[in-house]
Length: 167
Image (cartoon, rainbow, N blue to C red; front, side, top):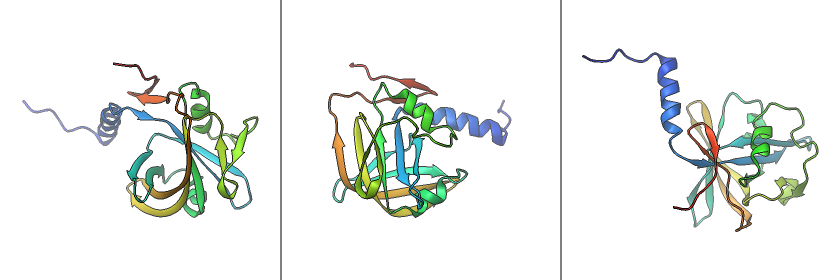
């Protein structure tokens, strides 16, 4: 006996749950708005594309108010969070007016805000954008990066934060 088809809402939830079985790192993407305001948001859609040239990819929901700023900016940074930076992931996932209040930052290329103590930080030139369903996909050139090798990354899997553990 066959199962009845899933409703759109049930399909979307099941699809999201299945995607959640792929463990990802957590990053905060940061830039500056044309008025100089620091802008940032949490993503887990960050990945490498190419080593030569050095390219990365991430995606942003078309429903977010910050989309026009990221779409138009010339430079932004990808801040890969360390396992003890869950508070930053949660902060930058909110709709707070001033996510940077009380947070120490470094100034990256062209004034792009860089979060301190991350596992790695990638400063990127915003080169290519593609429509991707309900998201906009960014493929960008890495122009500068740094890495703190002794820091373990913050991991997200099956709807919860996780830590790496050796096998």
